[in-house]
Amino acid sequence: MATDKLFKVFGVSKHPEQGYKVRFANDMLRSKVLTKSGHTDIELVELSEAVSKYEGILAIKNAPEFANAHAQAAIAEYLEEKAPKASKPAVKGVMKPAKAVKAPAKTAKVTEDEDAPF
Image 1: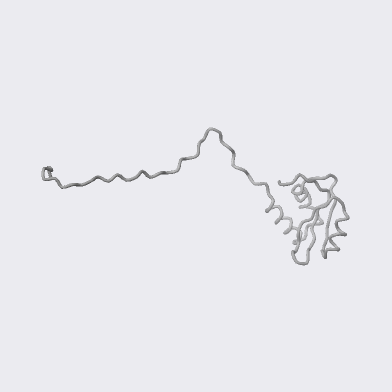
Image 2 (image 1 turned 90 degrees about the vertical axis):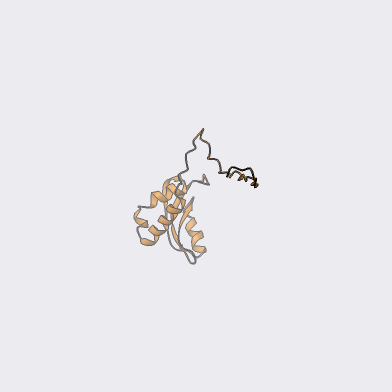
């Protein structure tokens, strides 16, 4: 992940223009800020310890507070978008295949000889 920040508060809210999105915070006062910004359907829970965003969303995924379809859709969208990507294992000692290079075509000079065997 791009960040090492840890959060204790996780949830979902509905933005008037962007729809339902997952939210992260360090304290429950985040709901006040979201309300001032026009958010509705704000549902936040505080975890016992601070965790990364991805781990926190995994933790609330099956919580009864987020059982509705809108919350589950926002959570699923976040998890799909931010899922850790498997990187290709680096193999030492293996060289990349060389690019194919065409050799210049050789052209033979043709002359008409009277002494040619043909």
